[in-house]
Length: 243
Ligand code: GLN
Image 1 (cartoon, protein in one colour):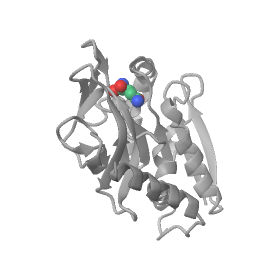
Image 2 (cartoon, helix red, strand yellow):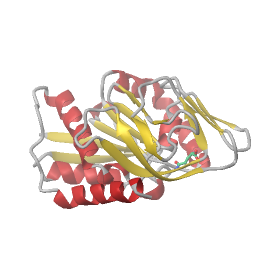
Image 3 (tube, helix red, strand yellow):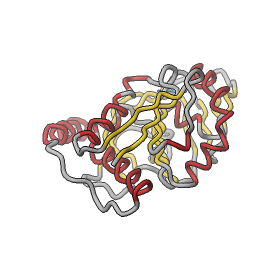
Image 4 (tube, protein in one colour):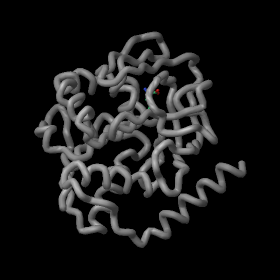
């Protein structure tokens, strides 16, 4: 089996080591003899998005979001169709904000979003939300908690299913105590870390969804010898929950 993994605008949207998510997907596929092809999609390198099985959009500065928006707008319709057709998309922080309707920055400037989904983000104060975060996931994950790190000024307000209930940290905004959104196989989240190496069960969730989309009858993934990853995950939870 084989998966095409698209890294969208990696030069502009790759804050706090978010490329680790691509490396994690590739490694967990390779360890299962699932071949992968990585496509770095940018304003200079265009590929047919219909070839993609998993799409990753990382975080970036407000300015990077604005720069990427202009080029990404050309692919808004096709990207919306991909999401509506259950393609796996993970968007982190700036990437997450970019797929919404708009983002109002700390100076009150409106950075337009692609409007692929119906939510928006805005600074409410000039205080950024920075720190460790733990969620009780709304997805069928084992283990169910998701750990990460958040650093964002924008607050997101959405009516979609959240990725999780916030146990530690802030999440989408200062009041709702939920984080991220889930829509079909699109996951938008503020969690850096990077999120997938910190939560191998979520990486496998995305890989399985992509294989099921592409090959149909894939029941489950074979187990990996990833005791070290799971020990790191449990340690992160112990440290953050006992603070
Ligand atoms: N514009 C975003 C914010 O600060 C981007 C931050 C990020 O991607 N980490 O809210």
